[in-house]
Length: 412
Image (cartoon, rainbow, N blue to C red; front, side, top):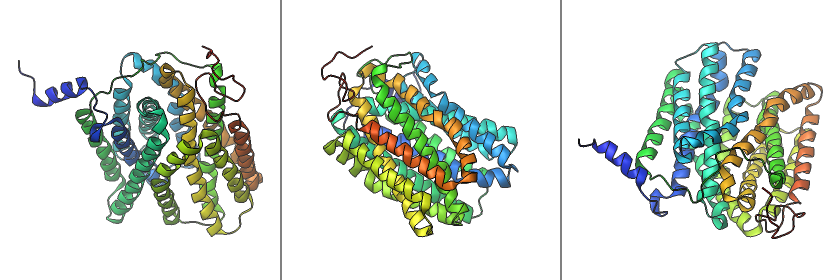
């Protein structure tokens, strides 16, 4: 019996060998996947507080529960590797995008407390498992000598999509479109792009078969530490920097949205250039620059009194985080090729450990002294600076830190 044309195309794409060149290359697929992700994710976050308050009648109690529910899949990202026994990473990334799309599209149709928790959990599951797979695939697909530049392009593509999402939300709200249809449009765009990716791109073969079990190795300890500190610092930026802009300086929703757009516009331009600088100067120097800059930013946050200066700090803070690409390329250089996928899941979980308890703890500190929260952020950046000094100038497998002897057999 003759197969339908669309099924023939799907099977042909699945078995096709990648050219590695042109628009059907791995880097293009990674960029399009991140665009699909951001269209839903940025829209969901932009509408979150207004939808929760105006449509679902949430108070601070329910918002706190919702944020905890949202972080559950991130904390459990390590379990993604267990699914690789049944499905390839590339397919799991696309399935995760489908879950993100469905979770986003259905949000506006279920404006009830427990339904909002459920759609948030679905959206977050798709987002976090996509992020885990995308990080693993990018480190496998991008050549080590050009990985930082490629990752910079992916960050730039994400920023472009986020700006598009902000403009989409703003334009639709101005036109009087309700929450239900905005969520549906954003989720529908993600769904359409994901389906097209499934049909248009081949299944890229694994250069090295990935382990299907969890990997936690002592020789990766510096990478784990850098990831943990990065997650902790990011919580201070995400939770308290924006909150300060509103509470202390009275920034409006429009002003905060404009800051988001400026942040992403800078990333579109700077991220690929940052990738080139990492290639030229190495991960050690790049991360040292980031952490020295963040020490200054957080210390200034603690005592800033001018709203314009605060806005500049917010943009600079966000720009420095783009240099965190260097943490990924550092791991790419020291890792055994078969460890990349399982370690990506473990790293994502480590990154989210701080998200579970730090916002709550620092919330109590904020009530006593907002400056103390940012001074703690400066201390975290200083700790990261000390860790970055331990990165070799030329990290490779078996020479993961300045304490490891070059050429030493890696520990299993």
